[in-house]
Image 1 (cartoon, rainbow, N blue to C red):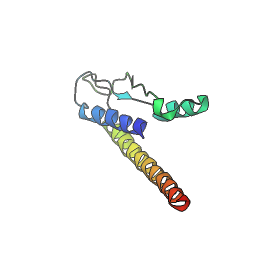
Image 2 (image 1 turned 60 degrees about the horizontal axis):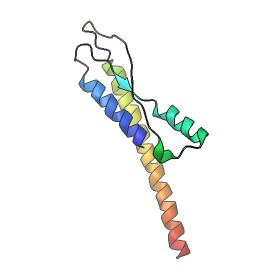
Image 3 (image 1 turned 135 degrees about the horizontal axis):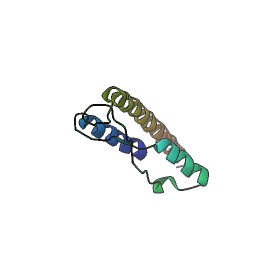
Image 4 (image 1 turned 90 degrees about the vertical axis):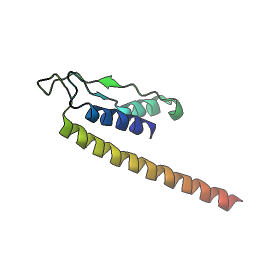
Length: 103
């Protein structure tokens, strides 16, 4: 969830700077970072997500933000975050049920 939240922050920052001359958008690939950490057996609470800058030019002022594409990415990432919250809530419900049954 923290990776998705960090990505949402970067994406909304990109949108806020869509009219800033020479601004280059930032992003993170938290899903790949998470998959690699799981594969390597790294504790999930110790994962560090590293932003990267996407060097591109989409406007005559040197700005690299494609507002339509970034808006779609914000929406997609928001849905993913909601799914992660639902999974976490379901997991907590199962644990609470197990604790209640055992008591």
